[in-house]
Amino acid sequence: MAEFLPKSILVTTDLSSAATAAYPAARSLAVAYEATVTLLTCIDISIHLGESSAGFEMPLVYLPEAVDAIKDRTESSLKEHLIRFFPGLAARHAVLEAARPVHHTIVEYIRSSGAELVVTASHGRTGISRALLGSVAEHVARNAHAPTLIIPCGKAE
Image 1 (cartoon, rainbow, N blue to C red):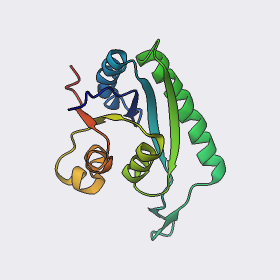
Image 2: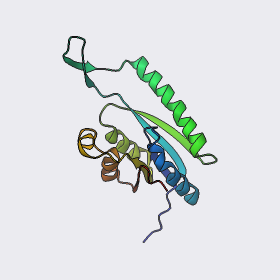
Image 3: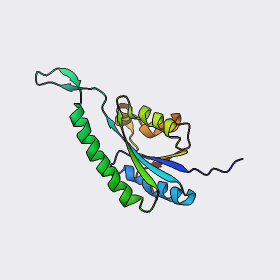
């Protein structure tokens, strides 16, 4: 059996404090394998339904200027996360616009980037919130075609 020595680690994040639970494991693996880290987040630009002032649902579409502003703020946050949580490592960030479910966008990025290992946190949703929101981590693990380490939030140690 060949030895597993990943040189590129993809860390997914929604920039929440819960998502940072995956960072210590990703950092340790990057140090151990002398791997490059890419910190990835997605901006959900899919069309959602919202209630109008008249009380009926209508599609909400993001204006390009609004998406650009969100993307700029997100990139700044990612850079701060890299400095704070991954100092001294070969690291970069990526922000993707997700026009369909975020997990599809992440899986496509994994394939196109050639990431050899994926590290992600799971928010641990259960019940109705899991049924409504799904589990991005679970979808990524099932479809990534790369080893995926899921860190449950609150159990990073």
